[in-house]
Amino acid sequence: MLSKMVSVMAEVVLETPRLTLVMWGEDDAGLIQSLHSSIATTRYLSGAAPWSQEKAAERLRNWFEERRRDGITKYKLLRRADGMLAGRAGFSLLGGQYELGYSICREAWGNGYATEIAGALARWFFEKDFSDRFIAFTHPDNVASQRVLMKIGMLPCEPMTIDGIRCPTFEMTR
Image 1: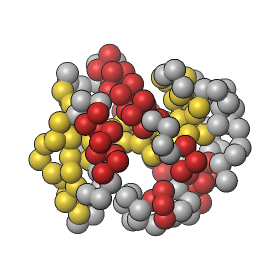
Image 2 (image 1 turned 120 degrees about the vertical axis):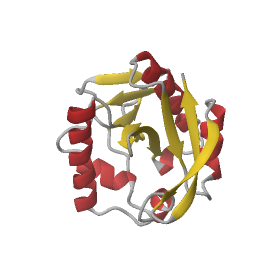
Image 3 (image 1 turned 90 degrees about the vertical axis):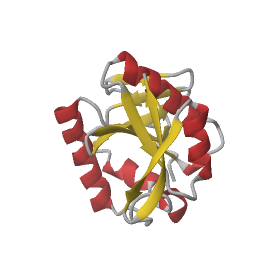
Image 4 (image 1 turned 60 degrees about the vertical axis):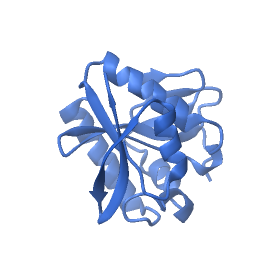
């Protein structure tokens, strides 16, 4: 269960009225594993299986490396009201393109957090001048995420093939 409160000692990357993005802590692999511990929360992700502690630790190391190398990564998403983990969100470089991605904790689904953080990240991305364009893709069956991307103003573009699946892909330009 993700009932554990998370300390917000880390650098604040971005805040919205209800959410805060911070960099992960060195000991956060357990939080990441909890976020992706069920089929419901991983069915649209690469591998479509719950994450092991080892996979979560590997992703955490990768996010630290991305942040060091690229100045950007997927961050820890917290609810401002109580410091509870709400998910993860941010950008990664994928094939030379910036890619927006997010995962929301199952307990937090249906609150509009994905739309709130995706829209805020889009504005932040252009304010920080990372690039003039970014993309996002979804599993073909993830209609809710496709709606989020369109709601924040992203437009459909050429689909990408990820792990052998032709994925709806969206772009946003400055």
